[in-house]
Length: 417
Image (tube, rainbow, N blue to C red):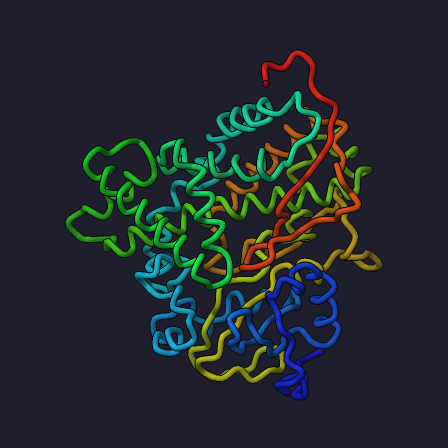
C-alpha cells in the first residue's frame, strides 16, 4: 500500500504528538498504517511534515541519502516556526545527532570507543552493583513507584559515572533532560539553558582538572593542535550524551516493565529462565519503542518516498513505535502480541544506517541487568493500582510511563530503611 493524494487535504491532516495521540499511540498508528506507510501530518509545533509509520519504509527513510539530519541549511524556516532548538548553539546543535557526513563521521568516531561491546561489557559489574543499591533503598517498602525509585535514577547514575558528572547533580540533570526532550516550550528552553550552563561549567572544571572519564577525554581531543572538536561541538556532544545517553534506557526499562506487569505469565517465564532476558529486551524494543519518533530529517531535494512526493525542504519524521508493530514476526503471528521468547525480534528502535544509536550496546546491557535484578528480587511484583491505567509521557519524541506504582513482597533482613 502506498500514500494516497487525498490524505493531504488540510482539514483531514492527522495531528500527531498531542497528549491524546500519545496516550493512544498504538491505536492511532495502527489506523495510519492501515491507510498507508507514510502520511502528511501536523506536528505538535503546528508545522506540516511527513510521518513514516511502516516498518520497511522506516528502514528506507532512516538510511535515505536525500534526508539530512543537519538543520543548518533550513535555519531561517526553523527560526520562523519556533523550532530553532535544533540549531547549533541552541544546546542540541553541534553534535552527531544533528550532523551529516563528514562531520557526523568525525564526531561519532571521537566517542565510539566508549560504547564498543567490549568497553560496555566491562561496565557490567558496576551496573549490577548500582541496580542492587537502588533496590536496596526500597526493598522493604512493599509498594513503590519504579520510575522515581529505579527506572529513572539508575540509567542517570550509569551515564553520570561514565561521563564524570558528580553524583550530587544527578537529580538536576534528570529534571533538565526530561524537560529538554519534551515539545518546544518556555519550560523546555529554560531546561536547555540550565543543562548547557551546568555542562559548560563542568567542562571548564575538567579542562583544569582532568579525570578518568569520557568528558575529560573529549576535552583532550578538543585541545589537540588539529582542533578536532570546536567548543560548540564539545558542548553539543556533552549535552546529547547526557540527554540521549540515559533517556532511551529510562523508557526502555519503563516500557518493558509495563509489558511484564500487563503479562505476568511472561514475567514468570523470564524468572524461570533469566538467560532469556537479553533476547526479551529485543522484543521489548520492538513491542514498545522507547523513542516514539525520530528527530526531524530534512529533504535536500525532491524525491518519492513510499509513493509520496517529498519536496526539497520538507521534513520527515519516522515513528519508531509504529514501525515495531509493523515489523515481520513470522507468518500467522500477531505483531501486537508480546512474546518474550520470540526469535528473532526485528525492530528499528535504535535506528538504521549510519545514525544507528551509538549507545545501543549500553542500553541493552543496562536493561538486561536491571530487569534481571528486579525480577529476582521482586518476585511478586504487580500493579499497585491497575484500575488507574498507565499515564504516558504527554509530549516529546520519547515514549514511556510517567509512573509505575507496584506492590511486592518486602524483603526480610534488608538494610534498607
